[in-house]
Length: 287
Image 1 (spheres, one colour):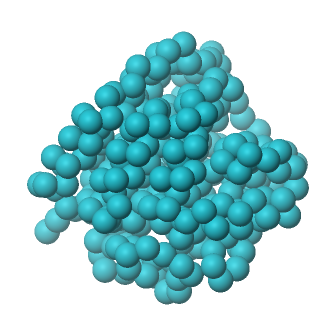
Image 2: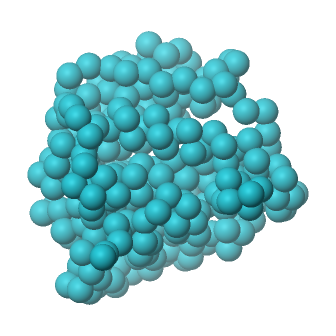
């Protein structure tokens, strides 16, 4: 017997709703053993970020290489990498897929609106990280920042920007439309074979801290389990070596179902006075 192993490469959130804390909770909730490489310390709570203390790039690389020398990692999720040097180091280590398929959440701005990485780091994500990513999951502002265009305000613009991001090297792009408003939250999955829209009723809540972290880590956990169990699903458009035949459209639906439940239950936690966290263990705690 062995466990499906997922890795998060991200920053720390003391309030527990985002970053590696959210990722590890999500991995556990979805049945994957969680490992973590730390890229930055943050001083933050549910109301905002007051400071970021990056881990030196060479030590981030040492963490990764030491982990991969001993542990078989089935899927890797990338979150806030902080600096351009860290972005390039992580991209270099992951170029030959020692940690399985790469789910890249290009974290740039916190839910509170606080900017988390520099423009130089954004440029490094665009040129160094996207080409080694199997799935990239930007929200509308992040997609716009990567493309240096205005944020999408309509679903067709999400599709257009998803196609433009696909041309930068990732195998698959999921552009999240939560910022568009409306009664439904619409995301678009763009692959070399076409576009799939995925919709959920919008949840009215202020407990939205860590939603992007949670969705991307859910995708990594589900991918890790599929690959560990030898069942990638059926059908695949595009992809890099190491992701088998993952059906990303199916995994997106499953990940969104998990996030929908966590969002709906987040308010019951009563954590913090700002944007509270989603409830990663809603199904189990309520039971």
